[in-house]
Image (tube, rainbow, N blue to C red; front, side, top):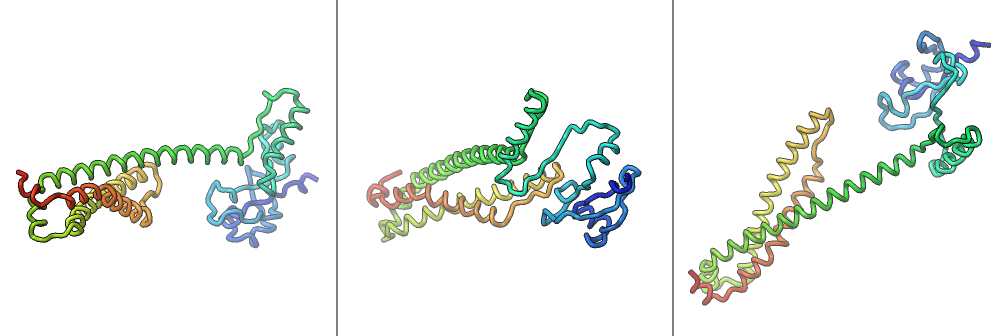
Length: 254
């Protein structure tokens, strides 16, 4: 009778690590804390990439056998799985109702739905992402204003040059293109330096944390595109001012 309970069901990760495949695991003996268990089943694979400690790394055994192995008749934690994630809230409510009828005191137990934990975590991540996005937006605005100020100073210092070029026949469009391109180049150089610095810092922090962290090509392209766009956007006003200067007034400036 006792031997009948010494059976277990293992996860796909355990089957692959110990026996090479699920087919080879059936009927094999698995020893846990000195107790021999016959493997009677392998659970279906739940993750594409299986890792140690993941959802495919487990051993299921009869409840009574687990109690005997723990040498404790009190089991403090239970895990319930629902086939449909949309039923998680209802299942949580039913378990809470059952426990309340049993103990009549909500302080004696805690029921946690992992879907609720996931939703709270996603909400926190969304808040952090929104905060970081706001900081990034303010930083871009400050950078754009800085580029615009630099170009305005450049236009002021080169007023006489602009007057000479316009007196020699340079069109408004040509003058505007010159300063817009200068603004875009200035902003692009800052973007390239930022990408290099960000890549170095990200890699260094990743190594310290034991993680593989590196910027993706898409992120690099987006960052570079944004830096160029900032230069074009905030460089338009100084360029338009330069192109609109009166040649006579520009030549008279010191």
